[in-house]
Each structure stands twice: as C-alpha cells, then as structure tokens.
Length: 278
Length: 308
Image (cartoon, rainbow over all chains, first blue to last red; front, side, top):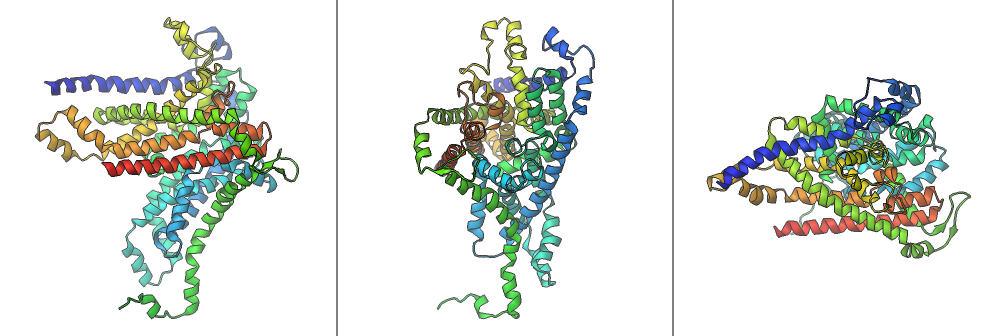
C-alpha cells in the first residue's frame, strides 16, 4: 500500500520537479534572448516579458561593429596559448611525479596539491606589481603567466592520478629497447594520456574563458582585454541600452554554448573532473 | 643480517650517465615548479611582506609600519562584516544548494528517458561568465524595469517588490540567490555521479527482503551518498570563503558594505583606495582564514568518515 503510494507520488513529482527546474534555469536565458531582439524604445513601452515585436537584429549588428571582435580575438589568443602551455607543462610534471623516482617526490606532490586551495586573490597585488614592473601591464601576455601557473595544481593532480594507471609493462618494454625517459614520455605517456589531457584542456579552457579578476586588474584598454570584460566595459558606457547589452551577453556566451552543443558529455565530464577530485 | 639495497652493490656502468639521470626528474618538473614559485609562492609571501607596509602603490616602496595594519584590521568593522558575510554565503550555499541539487539528481536518476536532455539544459548556467550573469541579473532585479518586480506586480504581490540590490537588507540575499542558481547544477551532477555508482544488486537484494522503494532510498541510497555530500560541503564552503565575482559585478560590496566579502573589500582597498599595504593585510588574513577553514573541514570530514 505504502509502496504503491510512494510510486504514485514519484510518478507525479518527478516530471513536475523536472519541468519546474527547467523553467527556473531557462527563464533568465529567454529574458536575455528576447530582450536582445527588442528595440530600446520597446523596452520602455511594452512589458518586460512581452515577446519582441519583430526579429530585430540591429543590436547584434551594432555590437559586432564595436570592439567585440577584438575582445574575442584576445580571448582566443590568450586561452589557446595558456591551455597549450598548461597541458604540456602539467603533463611533464605529472610524468615525473607519477613514474620517476627522486627524493622529494611525495612532499612535492603534496605541496602542489595544497596549491589548489590557495585563494588566488592573495596573489593579485604582488602579481599586479610584478606585471607592471615587467612592462607587461595591459598586454594579453600579462594574463598568460598567472593563468598557466594558477591552473597547474589541479591539472598536475588530475594527470598524475591518470598516469599512475598506465601499465608499467609498456614502459619496461621500452626501457629494454633502450628508450630513455624523454622518449618514453613522448612516445608512450603523452599518447596514452589523451583522455586525461583533454579533460585538463576542457576544464581549464572553460574556467579561463570566463576568468574575470586577473583580466580586470592586469589589462585596461579594449584593445587588450578579453571577452568577460567586453560586458563589463560595455555596461559602464551604455548602461541604459539594455537590448544592446543583452545582445552582447548572448554573443559572448555563444562560443562556449556552441562548443557545448558539439560535445556535451565530454564538457560536462571535463568540468566536473577538476572539482570532483579536489 | 641486514639487507643491503641491491643498487649500492651493483655499480652501474658509465658514471656520467648515472649523474645525468639524477637530473631527469628536475628537467621534467622545472617549468611547473618555476611558474608555481613565481606566480603562487612568491606572491603569497610577498603579500605578507606588503601587509607590513603603508604604501599607495606609487613611488619606490612603502613605509614599514610593523604590525600596525594587523592591529587596524582587528578593529575594522567593515572587515569583520565581510568575514561574517563570507560565512553567511557559505552557510546558505550549503543549506540551499545541496538539498535542491540532491532532489534534482534523484529526479534525473528516476526520470530515465528525457533526463539526458534535461541534464544538458540544466548545465547551461555553469558555462556563463559571472560578469555576463551579473549584468543579466542586475537587470532582472532592476526596481523599475526589471522582470522580477513587474512579475510581482502582475500577480498582485506589489508589496513584495523591492529595490533588491539597492537595499542593504536584501542585497546579499539577492546575490546569493543568483550564486545558488548558477551552482546548483554543479552539485546536482556531483550527486548524479554518486547515484550512478550505486550498485544495483544492493537495491535488488533489499527488494527481495521486502523493503519498499521509500525505505531503500532513505536507508540505503542516501547513506551511500554521504561521501559525495562531504565533498559537496567542502567545495561549497571553500568556494564561498574565497568568492568574489558575482558580488563584485552586481553590488560591488554595497550598499553600505552590506554585501561585502573579504575578496571584494580587499579589491576596493587596493585598487580604489590605493592602500596596497592594508589591502595586502586583508588578503593575507583571507588566506589564513580560508586555509584554516579548509584544514578544519578536511579534518572533520575525515572524522565523520571513520564514524560510519
């Protein structure tokens, strides 16, 4: 009896709750999309939740005519260079920590993992001063150093765990064939770590694509800033043009959403990996 | 009899090669270690050093003032308000996000067909940058043109309409709601992974023993998730104590410091008030608090683990 009632409850509750959260999640997105298609005048004359009167793409055109593409270019450059370096450097370190014998292996690994809980804001002022002194302030290069370094602890952690599971027989066979550690790393560990490397690339790529505070502090002009700051700079300048702002929000979010459309499972897995293990 | 390691007995041929081999790990680790020292360790120590200075950031260096900044911090009501807000954020993050996330994970786990599409859509907020989200929700909360107040008026609850971000009573809560909205799917996926690892045989065995679905859920599945729950609490607490983005974008810590966090207060002290020394004191104190809380949380979660 109780059994049947619980079953009935779950049969109603599951779809109701599922759809309820779907509404909670999607309403803000629909608000952004609909508002971005309205004219500035429309936002004052008709209620906020009214559908746009016509498909008006003018806001998108004016955003694309502005600095948007420069911000996009900077983002692509900074993220591509940073992620490449993160994957390469953390794979090298992970290989040493997972397989090479040396005296401080364990304490070093512990220290690097501890780096994952450091609140990055404590590094902000010294890194700002350092960047200024190096003459890198307000260049895209200012961001690459901090981006790579702050992503290393979690990446090294993920990859060390991954490489520890690669069977030892493979490298022993290679050793017998006279391969040194560099050949073993390049020919065996890098190719076999493919899934781990792509997890690291996805996790850091998304986190850095949306990174705000370092980009905000280390750059100052639209010519050198990344996409999250496009929205920030725009709201300072055109706070009253809400439809144009929403078009900009849509455009800045689009690259990740499109990428997500191509590989949801991989991206979900990649984004969870970094924190699941932390 | 003592056991002598075999390596000391067998001398390897080629002493040069041996000494080269000793440097191999160093070569692999060098790029990572150098970057971590330059961009993480040095700034960490440097921050503590700067906390002893009185400096506006211009000129060669500041004036050494010893522990003056730390004494000032102890009596700084804004800092302690910020600390309190960080813990309020941590408390509500755990209290709101984890239960809702658990319910949604169970819903998706039960839904079977169609759950894949829901999961994909639920995940979308996590892909958004906090600046974009902050700007969107500032509009949602707008007292005059925002959809939230318009909605409340339309359904006859006009009394509830507020200046959400402009009123010190509501600002922190309003931003916390957005933080929860963005992060609930993350914890949902965490729980979903936990549920997926639940062995089917267990519930089948319980079924044979006459247990109902309800009993199986409360007595077997939920306890099975407690490891996941611990991870979730840990992540939510640490994430909350070092939070910055949405608060800074939506309220800047205002009005009247009502929504200030340690990180936003630190930012304003350094980059708006140009007090690099005192700002570094705030940053260093934040580091101590976050590290202590993380260590404590890890310890507590281990103790809970052994009790079960």
